[in-house]
Length: 383
Image (cartoon, helix red, strand yellow):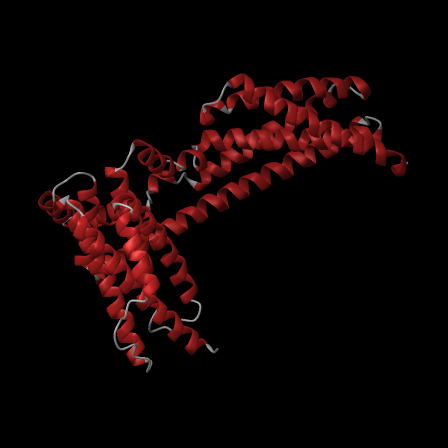
């Protein structure tokens, strides 16, 4: 099957899926008693109809007119089953379907031509928006457990974006662990030769610090670039389809408890300030906010200095002592530092400081003992 055949097959499947989704939404709307929820479901059905119309038009251009949509027994049975499950449970299933459609469109892009690529990307982003609408839809009218799950998913950024403090703690832990392991291994291999240990320890501290700093900078910068890219895509959508984007904003406001009239007024008012409207829509539709991204240079400096500080600790005794004395003091202060760094993690994790400190200590000691043992094993081969 060549790319054109794959494209026709993919668009045909997308056309069927959009038609089926529209019918599913209308079936749920028909039995929904809440007028606001009914209106939202019907508007989602209309959006799916638009997608289906887009695909049938393109299929005709490709010489593959699907004629008319006929619901298969499987699709009919699925729609019946969704209706029996109740609106909330059905919407959860439809949310997963919208997420699946997003993945399907991503695969379809691999065989798309320049003509349908913008249409597919637009449909893909609308499916993402629909999934978020459905997530909020259920969260606003569901049992406490569902609301809790939604809140926990929404607040994942607390784990992945703890700010420069979290970056500093992570850097100190990484530098300390790496240097403690290297120093212990070299000490075991060289019979605690202070010169070799110092050289390897300082080299490790510098390399780890630069690596962590550059990694933090590039990772944070990439996140910011992705944010800017998504913002630009959203900006183009607002310019090309302002009414559809405003309609999406109205839906999000309705899901927050505002009446359709209030939501319409708020969205219209927001649309008078294009930049504010853009950022608000990106936040509601995609969960993006520039406030969640730290400054790349701040992240880099924080990671570099904290990693260097952590990595330098195991080396300090070797400036003043030699032999077993230096090894013993390195072991003592590194163990204490592991506990301190572990305890400091409570700033971003909220865990027990003692348990966190002990966990880090055990891991650090285990790493040092393993590398020291390896050093003892390979030491004779170096002489």
